[in-house]
Image (cartoon, rainbow, N blue to C red):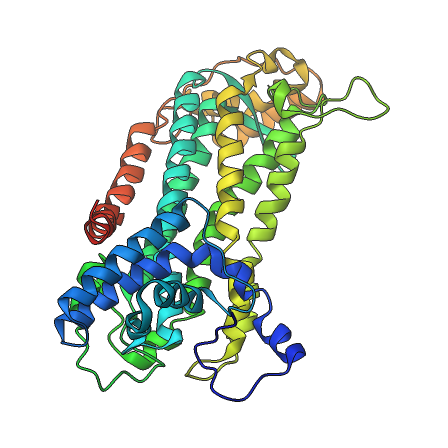
Length: 446
């Protein structure tokens, strides 16, 4: 049975239908359970303003909970001839409850319905991303503490520069993730505002109770202005994409370092054997394919904000079908990033560190600054100490003291991992995911 919520008497050209529907039915499967959740809140509100009876609400909610469970199990499908998830849900309700199922659309448009679906989906995915980032962060901090006394070369311009440590290396990426989470929290807060009730972008003559649906769905607040609620589509996705891109940027750099340090010419780390692949002709090869793919996927994710911007950027206020295309690049991005986070977490936990890198004399010059500083502390002017050590290196007479005494905050001897962990915890606490979770469980009767 074909069903389009807008269809009246004129049949649309099949090629036009194929072109305009595009991948919407495929993309809408991401949104199925959130469409049901939003509808449950909407009809609860409709009953409170007299557009549904208590008996009708009870029957509709029972059927919607059944459809929600079906979507959770991955069994929800959009049938052939049915245009989108909204049409499919309404069709299923109408089959089971007759004309009662047609009442759920009162006071809303597909515009604010898909806006709501996108926000409910996105905030749930942000929660998953935040949890995955926190897991990687914890592993990085643990490894930083475990290897805090193992020195390694630090580089500038890919030239050996100064002493670093694995404590610093692991901890640097942990702190980078802590910063990334600030972007993610800001994206969550702009996402977690209720657009339901804006209808097609100009409100409704029904006396809708938008405060009620905001509370039922656990939003922090609503998008108050109905025109702005519609203008927020595309903007929300772009802002979230920037947060995902920030995390992806950290992962990409980590993956690059790991590939570089795992190569035989460096030999700083050894990736787990089960995370490498072989060559079809070279039996000795153990290629870091997982991190190479992570690097590529994360670099692709860093282009996501620009893709969304270029689709939405030249549109005036109001709804336009262009926005449909954003779903195709936006909705799958979360799983791609979660996959990369999962891989990085496993590898960083299993990675093995070379604790004797600096036994190789090629790295002796990294201790030159330590010697300059020692001479300066003993009273020699810094510039004279710099020249003295430089001449010794040129003459091949420099003998390093392979010890470092860095004590300031954030240095080799004072990593401040406890403070970095506190920053991450403060940001995680600031999401207040429990508000969303409690509201959804209450609405579902769980």
